[in-house]
Image (cartoon, rainbow, N blue to C red; front, side):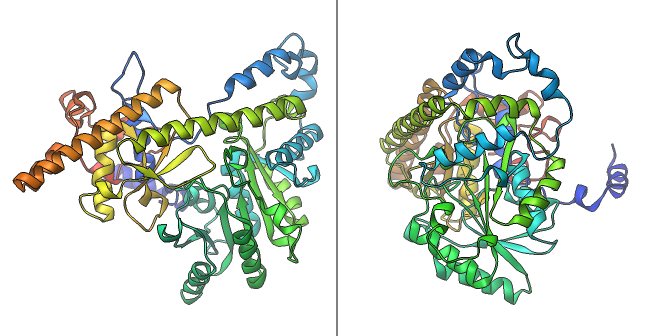
Length: 497
């Protein structure tokens, strides 16, 4: 299709469809393209790109699979469970099965240590956390309104929160001087800046545990946030989709636990939850909005018609999550396995002097590569990132895509692969750093910056962009794009290392 035809076609589409509000024009999604074009496989493609940009919990699938085998009646696709097929397959309203809502409320409580309880009648379904986040925005804000979000934050928030709703994001700058903690001063500064720009702030959104930091918010910080939004009479949306990934101290404190002992307006408090991270089930598209505001619950239920959880999924998970013995074993085992994997990965990085922000939750590490930057700038970060993706063969996510205010931080996921793949990834990282240090030492001796630049890039020949050019395929050709990110104009597409 010619450029004029493409322009004419875009003019036939809506402003939303042709806008850049999807937020996928970002290195965060570009790394996925590199992986999709050349995915690692231990035998079929051992030098391919390892996917370390996907925050997915694959460490405890065996427990879920074992439960499914022992409970065939939970599925309508088995001889034992087919008698429920008609009841599950016929029309279901947007309230969801009572058993499912009860199961989700019970699981939410257990994932938070049983210190709080949740009302099944406040559980609103949605199609994954993406749908849940958007649903909350539709309920709370109008196009042009804004939410404050402490940085660094999930890159796809631009898509989830704003693409179709028209809601804006105002970053609250946090930095490494205090381990990226949220301060009242930073909140006030962001709020005042928005006010000066005539932006109507409707609330604050936090992720607890944090994505990408892997840290949990302490009680004092949460109380400070509640006081802030209560004073401003704006909303607080708590994304708690990593609640059950806490694997070490301190103990996780959720927003529901905090407001039990505070004098605040509960109508301003809302929770987004899902089973994508805690149980590793993103494909089942289970998203939950839990609000203390009756109007949000009622309106959200009506809006949820656009993205319900399938009745078959509700049927199975309702049975699974009400099995107290299974849930207790799953939560305990998953936590132990995450702690072990986190320890293996961080210790492997420490062997070559790479540190990560101290964390106690999540499916990733916030890796500090500032000392490897040739230039302490975001351009320098992009140079390093392109080398890591294209030549080291690791899809890691640069901090700039999370709106981190400091260059040199990278999110690297460790729970979406087996033990053997983790070792391959660690070996590549260690080789890269050691070769870079050797090249740096040579620079000191011969004072040749060009030599440092050339030697920094590892000779993983099968990962080099030259290999794809020789085969007549650009490494990130727009004709071979991942469905995760169909945008052809981001930095990794334009640049070749």
